[in-house]
Image (cartoon, rainbow, N blue to C red; front, side):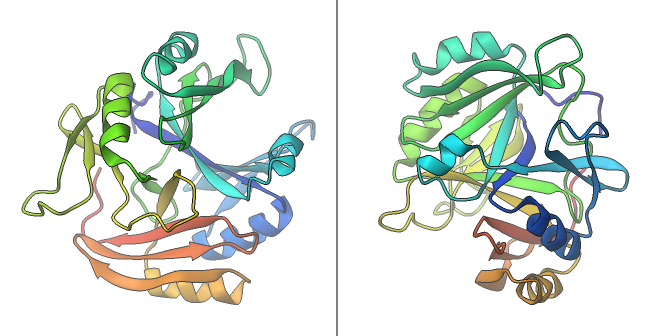
Amino acid sequence: MSDRHPAGMPSWVDLATTDVEGALDFYSAVMDWEYERDPTGEINYVMAVVDGRPAAGIFDMPPELLSEGVPPCWNVYVTVEDADEFASRVVVAGGAVMRPAVDMPEPGPNAAGRMVIAADPTGAVFCTWAPITAIGAGIVNAPGAFTWAEVATHDNDTAAQFYGQLFGWEAGTMEDMPDSPTVFTLGGKPVASTSAMPLPEGVPPHWRVSFGAADVDAACATAEAEGGSVIVPPFDWGPGRMATVADPAGAMFDLVTLTDWPE
């Protein structure tokens, strides 16, 4: 892992949930996560750790989201060089700024980074991260770590144009799979995709995340034993095996076992 993720790279994920303590127990069992808390107790943002490196975050869903009926969900962050400059381009590209640039967790040179919450033209919400003292994930593409992000939307072409304009992503398809989802690349490296599954009627566009698992089938069995649900049972897929799971509060994510883990 380098000391900084490239601009345009999905680099962090976190969970907004209605039950932080329950989530800690669930993901510890399923992902084998350990945790780091704010030693002062002032910030209720828990860091999930894999092999001693930051892997994801878990926090209480803000009251304003609860009042809007937003369910527990995983959020995707993309690295940018300048959060304020990025925010100024979102509307021009056809999206919306949901929360202007703000230092997190608090303003100042020692903040972890500067965040923007935005929505693409199809309505899928995502975040960006301009690092100050924290780059995002310290481990990816490994069991227990963030491995992939995909946008589920009714309009892949509009989404592809938007993200290409903002992040420099190029849209294509998987080699030898002309009917595959749109795959976004940055500098020739795959970084994200559209969803392979059609978006069900009534489900709003959204981003979803995948985590590595040493054994997808075993992880699904553990998820069910810990109060979660297996939404899509394990199946063989291209470079490995995957499944879709929901935690006890309803936040969905994918689990992936790869034949060859990329660096």
